[in-house]
Image (cartoon, rainbow, N blue to C red):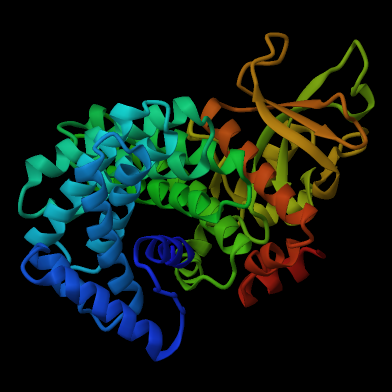
Length: 454
């Protein structure tokens, strides 16, 4: 921004030499901005042009210059687009939720709309129009709620159009998910809310699978699971029995904890992640990130034409996904118990031995273990020859052709895939220590682990 402004000023004002630093620049900006005020700038821009912050004064000056340029050349795409960007950034310097801020955001939206009329293929203009509309919705939510909802719907449309031109843009996917999440809070009934929340989850999930280091997408996915669980818990209109609702709430909270833990591991320095992990950490099957049933090929049959499958209890930590030993199964199902899937099957400490026997834990096959450092790719699959459930394909350096796993349902399969993709990314970047620390058991759990011989 500073360099572009310097070049523009030097071209337009003979003898002007920009110097970004010190009193010389302050005097130059004050002189140039002051020369433009004198009743010609709208009131908000006049105030911003005299702001003590140098960057704000630069933006106010640029806004005026772009306004003049677009008035003289209304078919200048770059001037229209840049005018929108400057107005959008300047709006953040005004009083929050004020009429002036809303007016400036509406003007920014009109600039993007005009720019797109000249260049319909500009995914950047579509994306930033969506951002401006989202900002406008927040600004007028209390004063003009109908306009806020309309702005959110239009923002959703702009993000969708942007992604048609630039598919799998994680920022656009993440912002689209936030818009859908916001719309779900004003849904007319439970069915509409559920559909909007599911769509938001899908956008966040696509964002983090496109870029596994995208901690914001991971965190937002965790928060949407968490808020939906609380909404379900308190909603008397939800079409489910009390028992089914309790099961769904516990499942959603456990999945929320998984994503928030992974976001913290991706960016341990972010305070909001640390605090959120403190809230949801008791919902994790510590010392594991995830635990549950998977139907997997018996180790001796992997890669053969007679592959045979068996449903076993698996655990995932910072090192590997593996078939749990009896001790690991006891530990991961201790306390309040965990749910194997959204179908509601509950596995608790008292029933471990029976469940283990049913799953075949401790059989003659070597337990299946997939080291995270050896993962090449993980994705959902729809292989018709697999047992019923949610299919997962995992390629490793040892078995590059892939190993097929089956979760109990589609929701569980998605959660397993995301956990493997992100944990594998952390291990591959040699950042597994952050996840290991996040999963470190509490003192009570450490005593229990010691008692189990782990």
